[in-house]
Amino acid sequence: MITDLVNSGKIDQLELSLTQVTGGENIIDWRLLLTKFKNVEMKQIDDTYFYSAVN
Image (tube, rainbow, N blue to C red; front, side, top):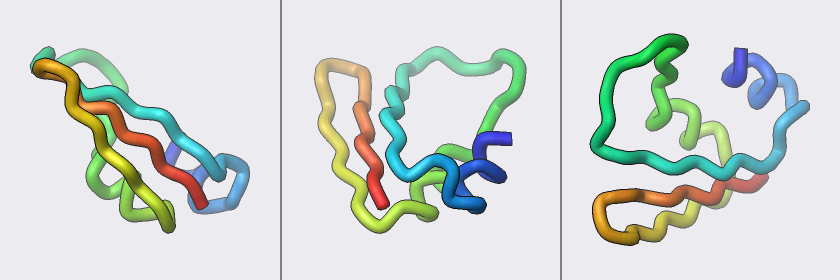
């Protein structure tokens, strides 16, 4: 669903944090999702990666 919203231009900014925790429901392909944005910045704090993506 989130990919559809990004593709349709309804989401033009995304803040994403990635941790070592895996599994869960509604897993997304975050790498593919980030390719939909023109500008992506990443910052690492300890074991967490923070992505800011903007069109």
